Image (cartoon, rainbow, N blue to C red; front, top):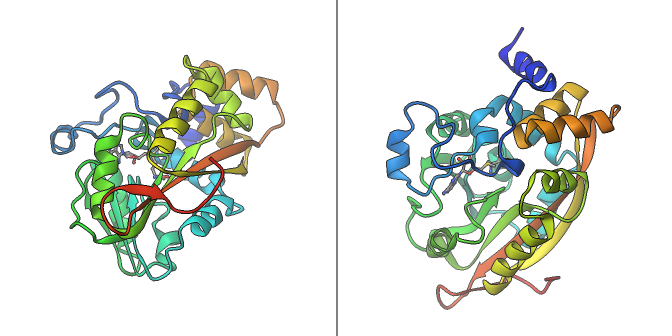
Length: 289
Ligand SMILES: C[S@@+](CC[C@H](N)C(=O)[O-])C[C@H]1O[C@@H](n2cnc3c(N)ncnc32)[C@H](O)[C@@H]1O
């Protein structure tokens, strides 16, 4: 039996401990694999992601299910097109999205602080045209000033309230007129939001309001995308819920939805443009706030 399938089955049986909800990082250093100390000192702001960092094979299944209809990719492209542009995928994880960006971008640069994930992303990039992966973090980008047109950050908890150092660094590497697009969970819509709420001590409205206010103060456009997670099997769904949520929350939802192989999932996208004349940011376009 392949390790992936064995993992999926163990997770479906509820043997895996739940990670922090929504892939949020655990306490500093929690779950860090051996050999990560050097990366920790090079990138002190790196927050280990227990979902992808602890379970890259299952996160791969999640990425395959997360936007199978392409709604999120289409919304990102509509906000800020990247055809013929230099695109940075910040916190690229194992590099799942690099190939989608490389289809149209002139150049793609994945940035990842986690050494194990970076190795996986580098192997992917080797098969793609004009795509490279570099060690770095939002706060320490190994790129010259004014060198990128578009920066993408998917599920980037490091760019959220408290993340001003990373945002300033992103603005440094963007060319005037270039844009950052962040993909986040919608804490107010969809079955996945209900699961996040069940796992959160803060409450979905407070979490969402804090993120909305932080981005609004920084001139971001905010749009919502309603989509779904669709899996090939119940075992895949169960495995993914167990890496994203505490086991009690995952088990309880699975018991209440015995036939489910998917669930509705909402996203919020925030986009900020570097002003043409300087480093201050402003909204990329008029849009719902
Ligand atoms: C939830 S994962 C998402 C991975 C990838 N964007 C995807 O959608 O497949 C968050 C990623 O951010 C990375 N990360 C954590 N702290 C970071 C930081 N300070 N700067 C940049 N990336 C960071 C993690 O190592 C992880 O790969």
